[in-house]
Length: 275
Image (cartoon, rainbow, N blue to C red):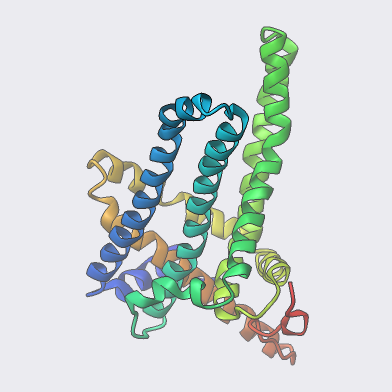
């Protein structure tokens, strides 16, 4: 029997009792790290205009521009990579909290210490899939601009935007558990965690989507409070989503054993442990 969203939220509240300080601290640390790297990115971008003249005077315009632009792109890639490695650490802490284990701030670096290339691979695959859904929309948008938004292009623009939106939602639902799976078993293949997540979500996408959108009103109120309320709302949402994964995993495992099958979600793909 599926666990109701209200029960999952109640479990999250119980798990977070006395631990909100840790969760808020994690948000500040994660935000500070990303802010520092973002500032470097902004300064690097700004320096393109300031440093271009010396390169021109030195007679190496092309080389100067290439170096500066490369610095901007590399800085942006670093921002994405750091976020992609911090996110698993945040989820690891919430998994410890929801499992009743001692959560440590040092776990924020979990992905840096456990096969970071696989966590980065999973993160960038998700980014690429999201981008791929948007390609038709951006192509139509360019054509629409060129043709001055004739009616047929406006219709196509709306349709491709819906494709972008619906495609990303469906992808998110299928792959939503992949990061949790990789955290529990960093040695498994990246594509293994994606396949396993898709298998787990069969027949469960509707419930997960309902749980996800049930927080929209709360998030809106959080922003209305100048973002202060989000300090408590974000941990609550994350803990609830973690409880969902733990509950789904236990339920599927119990059902499989009830049919006489032996299933280990951590080891299902262990034989394919090279990505």
